[in-house]
Amino acid sequence: MKFKQLTNKSEKITRIKQKIFSDSIYIRKNTFNIIGCRVDIEKTKSLMRAMKKGCCECKIVFALKFKKQSYQLDPTEYTKVNEILELVEPQNIEEIKVLNGNSATELYGVNGKCGAVIMYSNNRKVKRTIENML
Image (tube, rainbow, N blue to C red; front, side, top):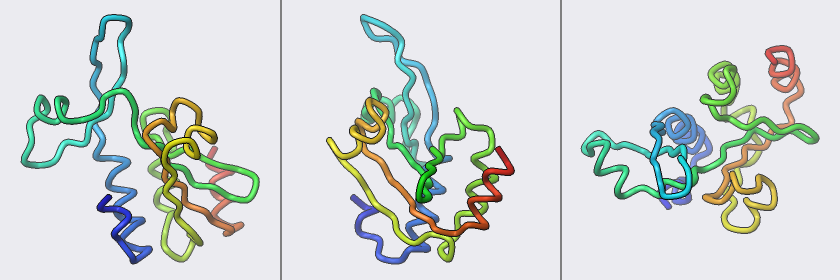
């Protein structure tokens, strides 16, 4: 909700970068299996309070999308996310879309259950740099 209220592209990109790295990982055991969860822990909260308050069965998907290629920005799954995020600057991003509900799950399946934030870029230099990194 706070993200949607931001109007400046630079502020949105800064918040996206913060959110990607502020998520913490912990494992919660339910009756059927073990679920990996990410919970945003604010400075004033303890881990236990954040776990109780947070929805622990999904997380927001962050992606950088070019015309035909898309890169998910999850530092726990992809080791080069730090380097990719250094290239994400307001002048390299044309549009930022927030997807909720069915539109997010159509693109990302179960991973998109909590929504997705997609940054669109047409910058060929950034795309080539990312391709060379990977």
